[in-house]
Amino acid sequence: MPRRGLVAGPDFEYFQRRFFTPVEVGALESMWEILHRYLPYNAHAASYTWKYEGEKLNMEYTLEENGIRDEEEEFDYLNMDGTLHTPAILLYFNDDLTEL
Image (tube, rainbow, N blue to C red; front, side, top):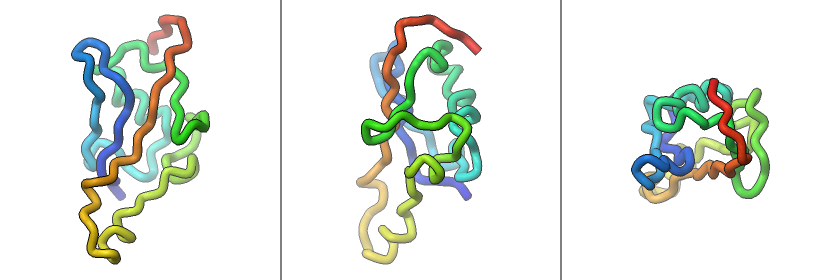
């Protein structure tokens, strides 16, 4: 099941954040699979610690297993615009230049 958007950290080439569309991030994908989708935008994506709300993400887990819930149904139930809230995954540089 695709999710609404997701922020995947800074794109240093353009000094912007990279927003993934719902089609790009599936609920059953592991964080490693999402990282591989991000590599064209930052070849050193594996050199970062990926965190959500200050907690380091387990790259073997899916978004939901890492505590990043799909709240689309809840937004619909409350008659709220779900596009106003996008879960943010922040990338913290580890001071190496690993490439996958």
